[in-house]
Image (cartoon, rainbow, N blue to C red; front, side):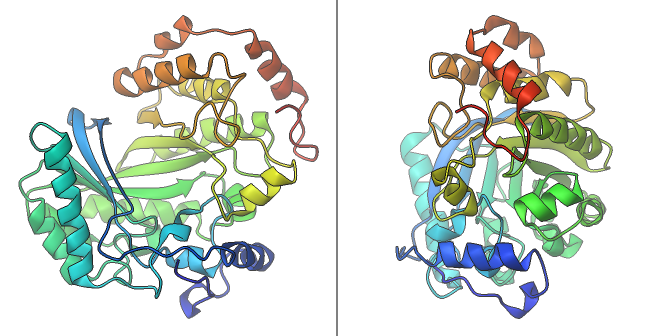
Length: 358
């Protein structure tokens, strides 16, 4: 992986203690990856402003998020899969795109109308993806309907987005906001920017005739179950009020390797959120003026969002159904005795004595 180091751009951002611990944890990883192979490729269905579309998702293997190499977010282990050296050549990045297109041809009937490109960092950061590569990728997918690219707010720029709009692509920028509460983002997630920076990024996107998809993190470390629920409801409502932000993707925390969250998990100080908590937030925000979706990665496992183990798959199916239909009545079809345990956790768990129940 690309070794963590506090580059000049990142100095003075985040919490020094968090960054130091995160660099030490990340340095334990000695895996290496090929620069011409994408990290991950898959096809699914997404609820978009143009309706439900088949989506080709490509996670490019770049030099990794520059913030993660400085220390980074407490829950994010994606930089562990990045290429050594901090940069990937233009030719190698396009080879990754070709590999993803080949996989699409082999596994899908026709081409997906939406393409989502992630780097586990910032696609619009030209140190990760050079301008010539961004422009070549825009041309490569000019025959599709929609494209989604991820970025930190710092790098959202109307001229960069124009590369995609000029190809006729409806364009969304996916921003890892994590929470609308600055204190939680700074102290629990160790992400340096403010909600105002997210609003500024949305303004840039709107100026380029693009939209924004906000990614929120449910239950970062150091929050109780109830605090996490309340933070998500409040964050979704605040995102809905920002011009240009049409979708919120609420990601329940899962325990990724080489992260502070994993260290807390091993020490008995962290439990991923209950799936019932995800359901509660989706119910409470169903009428918000924004599309809200959730993909509980690793559901049903100890390291992922889970309930008792008996009902997890049923609840996950209901969540997937809600993502496409935006109808909270789907949740009336699932119930389990463990819901009473979850209710007790919500009432009694405190952030200074986590977790109350596994």
